[in-house]
Image (cartoon, rainbow, N blue to C red; front, side, top):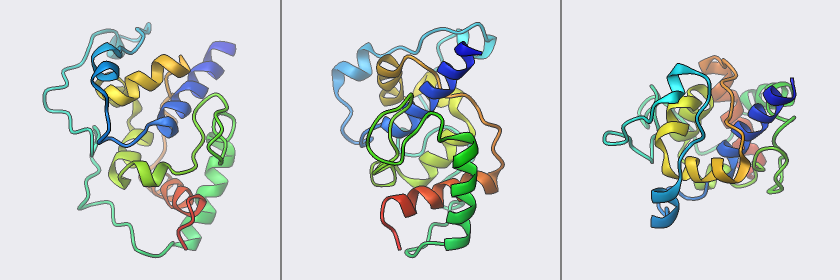
Length: 167
C-alpha cells in the first residue's frame, strides 16, 4: 500500500513539475533515466527517436484537443471533482510539491496535447521524455495510470486551466 501511494505521488509530481519543454538542459536529458520497475512494459528502455517532447506519446494532437480561448466552466467543475478523487493526494494546486509537483502554471509550461497524453498514457512518456525522466530522479515515484477516460482527462485539463487563471 505504501509503495503504491509513493508511486502515485511520484507520477503526479512528474506530470506537474515538468518545466518548459523548450528549455531542456543537456545534462538532465543525458543523465536522466527512469528507474526500472517489475513491469515488463517499463523494464526495457524505450526508443526516443520518434518521440515529440512537445506533444508527448499518445493519441492526442493539437488538432484533436480543442482548447478555447475561454474556460469551459462545466468541464472545469467536473475536472475539479475528478482531481479531488484521483490527483489531490499527490498534487497541490499551488506550486508547492506534495508527493508530485504542484499544478500551478502547468498549462503555461506544457501544451494541452502533452498534458492529455501524459495523464492518459504516463508510462511511455516517463520512459521517453527527458524532462519527465529528470523529474523522476527528483520525485522518485512514477505517476500511475489512473485509467482516465478521454472526457475525464479533458475535464482535468480544463480545471488546470482554471487553476492557472484562464477565465
